[in-house]
Amino acid sequence: DVPRAVEDAFQKEFPQLRIVVARTEDAFVAELPECEILVAMKIKPEQFALCRKLRWIHSPMAGVTSLLVPALVASNVTVTNGRTVHSLPVAEQTLAILFALARRMPACFRFQEEKQWGQDEFWLPGNKPFELHGKTLGLVGLGAIGHELAPRARALGMRILVVKRDPSRGGELA
Image 1: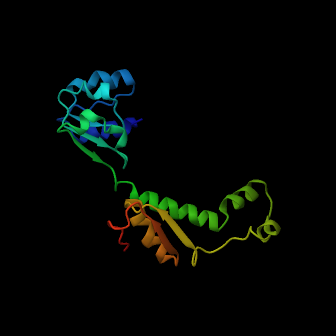
Image 2: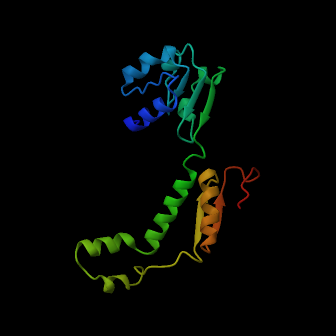
């Protein structure tokens, strides 16, 4: 759901546009006949059939498969996505999780909450914190997130392995 603050910010930035945030399915369907620009993650064929004026659909996500109903594919409606919009924050979040796991932060927080020292458990085999340096990071696919994550992980001394659907296309890492 779009936060009201985002809705207000868009309306302030673009006062010449009529911006509608459809918060229910009924409201969404009611707006489709007059809608020219649609931001959505999915659309049903019967909903797309209602779109008389639609020129552009934008998905805030990278994937657009749930938008690609046959009538849309056959139409002149432009479809765009947010492929690179979240790549840097997601790459950084991934690094944060890698650090948290390597340094055993969930266990640290649990010990702290339980008011326990926890050092004896930390040094048991398989429980010790470890460095990311020298570890291997496996990436399934090499999209925008992988392109942001790989050089950052490499800077930590990690080895990068990538599995791609089509190894002949793209994929050069910085």
